[in-house]
Amino acid sequence: MKTKAPVSKNERLDVTITDLTYQGMGVAKVDDFPLFIENALPGEDITIQVTKVQSHYGFARAIAWQSESPDRVKDVDKTYRQTGIAPLQHLAYPAQLKFKQHQIEELFSKAHQDVDVAPTLGMANPTQYRNKAQVPVRMIKGKLETGFYRQHSHELIPLTDFYIQDPAIDDAIVKVRDLLRQFEIPAYNEISDKGVIRNIMVRRGYYSHEMMVVLISRQQKLPSQDQLVDQIHKALPEVTSIVLNVNAKKTNVIMGNVTRTLYGKPTIEDTLMGLTFAISARSFYQVNPQQTEKLYQMAIDKAGLTGQETVIDAYCGIGTISLALAKHAKRVYGVDIVPEAIEDAKVNAQKNHLANVEFAVDKAEDQMAKWQEAGIKPDVVVVDPPRKGLAESLIDSTAKMGPKKVVYVSCNPATLVRDVARFQELGYAIDGPIQPVDQFPQTPHVESVTVLVKK
Image (cartoon, rainbow, N blue to C red; front, top):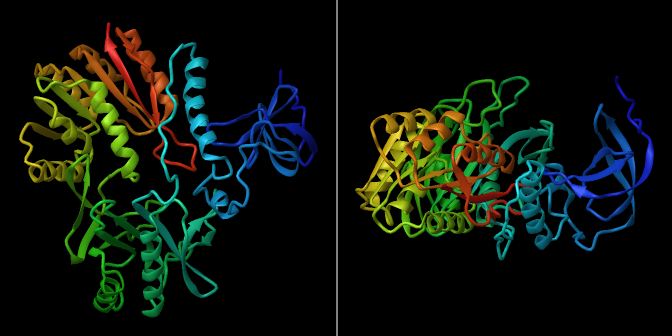
């Protein structure tokens, strides 16, 4: 029997916010019916207007505040919330760190798991941390603009300061935008599928300060290409690489398959954990290097390596964790599904004179089964999967190999809880507290390190 929701669209109500969702929205309950409200914090008394009603929950917007949370940050730029760049900027940073710790505790407790979660490791400056930007380029009122889309839309909001990005990257985007205007190179129009420049991507080494500018274009060659390239590297002395990426498809995917170096080298270099990495336009490289070092150091410490161990790194990317582990282990095996990433990983191993690592291109779950059949017996398995978590077959292969420890680096607490339960069924137990690390300040995302030991 369908029960009627206790609220209706456009209704105005006075409510108290009791919690935050994992997306950072305030929660108010009307007769146990949850309403989700942007820009609302626990403890606040608010007048709201209901905007949407589903069968089990609804959405509302805040109209007036009767009381405000002591954790509320005043004078925030609402653009960063509208575009989803910094959905938690209205929450004081110490409270953001508590929110992330609480998110993990809550999910485990819902799964009837009693776990200890340590306080979140935060940053001294929780802004201006991103070492990579991908910004859309569009024509607005006949003028080429760079910025970010309003959430859930394709309406571009022009922006020059992105708040969570390295300011040198923000500056580079403005200079490239101005040169595109000067050379009258039109922005892509997704409705007519005409125009040239779709996106600008900029990467900057946190330690090296080497900069890469990637122009993502619908065409194989840009108008005034040589002059444009010449002017970009004159305007930006840090630029050591200018790359053209061609994406001629009508798609939301940012990058195409064709990448050509127009100036300098095809990669920039940066260091992480004292190792040097070559980063190409399409490499996956963590966007917050300061926190990544804390995260990886935590994973290495928790692996408890003595130099005698065999380690498997599933989802190894360009080898960032693998090579950091290789300095402390006897042998490291890494696997990733992206062929370019594995090419980069091999180059990075040579760059750092590490010969005790071996890399394979495959789905992590398939390669794990192959290694298991080949009789490889790891002492430690490190997993750092995407948001969807681990395939069940990967967990099964890992358990069959019987490593003493599994170190799970997670970017999604919900899939972590699910995967941990599966490991527990196969004879593993959580060892010590789960350690959250704040890789993405001002957003609801939380990374964490969990250690599982064989019982």
